[in-house]
Every structure is written in structure tokens, then in C-alpha cells.
Image 1 (cartoon, rainbow, N blue to C red):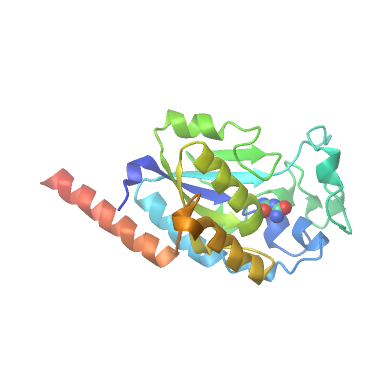
Image 2 (tube, rainbow, N blue to C red; image 1 turned 180 degrees about the vertical axis):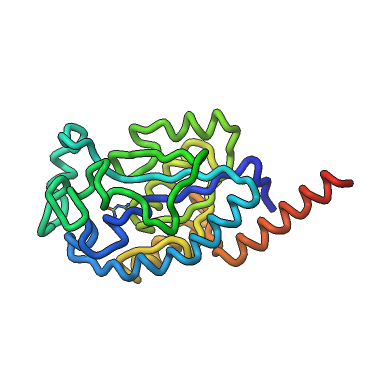
Length: 221
Ligand code: C5J
């Protein structure tokens, strides 16, 4: 049971650079097809949330064109064939304004949906996300996005530390590593939901339909 008026849908980093071949994710040696599986269920959730009038926020991981906000410690991570800022087939990897940095068509933001550009893994770090949520009176966050164990989980932890309830929709998040997908979700909900909990798109859509049905019934009663 939840109040859609106090709940935001968080769409984390559904960027071509992570999801499509030729982007940053593939440059790290990953198979991006595993990430593409999250798109259809996330699309259903996004559509339903829009219809219900829920607040939707999108995030994108990336950097300024001059890379002045890219720490050496991040630039040097992994053993990529290309680094952040290098030219790939969809433009410079993880650089704002490039094709690869932007969100896939199926989940593209519409007017009224803020896009939070973040330099880190967590969406609260060095962004105005907390201010937006507080301004809108939002207390609960529903998570879709990629990747489960990196930017999604980091943001869920940050959210809980800041006093937000967080639920992750298991089929709407994805990892390049099936084992990480499983354990990342286990971690969230272990110990009675140590920093969040886990649901899936079907259960969420049922809950949303019930909540909006109740709201409509209340309004017409
Ligand atoms: C990664 C992300 N995996 N959005 N970023 O580097 O999870």
C-alpha cells in the first residue's frame, strides 16, 4: 500500500552507453544484452506511473566535456579498451551532450520529468536530487535502472540514509553479471530490508492500480 502522490519513480541511468553495444559498458568487456532485458518491464512501469500522475525522475551518469569533474580515481577504474571521454561509436564515452550519454528512446523523459546529471554512481552525490524530492514532498522511491549493483544500489543506500523509503523492482533493474543481479537484490532486502526492499513490475503495477483506484473512488465518493 503506498501513496502515489508521495512516491517518485526513479529511472537510473538507462543510457545508451550502458545498454547498447558500442558504449561505455561494452568497452569494459560487458555483454550489454543482459541490460536490455530490463527495458520492456521498465517501459510498462514508466507508462503506468505517467498515467497515474506520479512524479518521474531520470538520472544520467556522465561528465563535462572538459572532464574537469572526472576524478583520476574514477578515470583509472577497470581495464577498459577505451576510457571515459574517449571517442566511441556513439560519441565520447559518458560525456554530457553525446548520443551515448543520453537515455534510450523507449524510456526517454517527457516534459515535467527532471533529468538529474550526476558525476558519480550515487544520484545524490553532487546533484540537486535531494532538493527536488524535498520540494515535491516525496518520501518513497521506486527504482528501475542499470546497473543493479552499481548505480542503482548506491543510490538506494544514499536514499535510505537520507530518510527515503526505497523499493527496487527486480525485473526493471539489470546487471552485466547474473550473479551480481541476484546478490545485489538479496543485499537490499536481507535483515528485514536493511536499506530498502524488493518487488517486481507485476506486483508494483497491481499496487499502483489499487492505489489509484482507491484515490479515484475517494474523489468521486
Ligand atoms: C556503472 C551505472 N555501472 N550506471 N554505472 O558504471 O551503474
